[in-house]
Amino acid sequence: MAHPIAPAATTPALTPISVKAILPWAVFFGILLMALIYFVGAEQGATSLISGEDVHEWVHDGRHLLGFPCH
Image 1 (cartoon, rainbow, N blue to C red):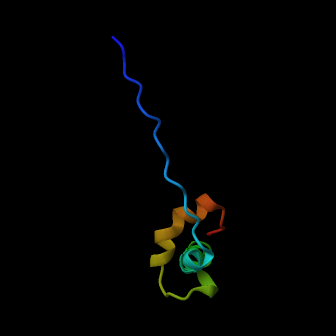
Image 2: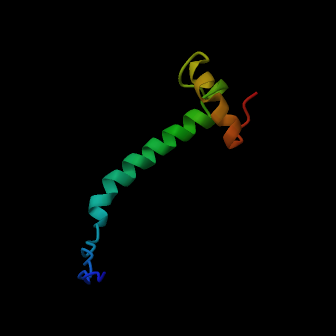
């Protein structure tokens, strides 16, 4: 049984994304990452912005996984 030869699939051309379009997203994710690092790494003790132990308990295992001293 002969198979017909299929035409070669064409790939769409990639269009570059400008820095102007990426910059707001990069700033947003940078601020989000810095807040996450703060809460995992420093939100405890004297530098605490939120009173109580709730944040500490929520990120406790993440602290140990990332090597931050906890207690």
